[in-house]
Length: 154
Image (cartoon, rainbow, N blue to C red):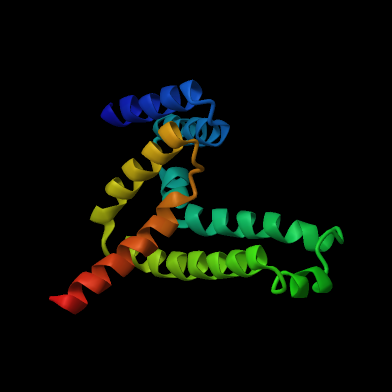
């Protein structure tokens, strides 16, 4: 029952903060949980827990590739991105975010007790700082890097 209260609180805060992404995600998860209880089969929720991250990454990547498909971004515009300071910073930021996320997935899989803290941090960023809920993956990567630095100096 506490999971419904927690999800309901997240939904409520999302509505207050006008964050439609988290509103839809909360409704989806509440719906999957209810569906699993009605059918006495939590398989759909378990599937989402096990494969949702990968599915989300696929959908997000596909959305990022749309400008290439519609011709807005060409090979020339990609090459030109290396010619301006903001382009170089953006390429570097994208590189660091991808690397961070790459380390974040294994960290979340090998150390699941970090996930609640990542969720709390992401929700704080979403609700109070107008962030977007892609944070847990990158935050896990940052967490990995910080842990690696701390381990190195110990």
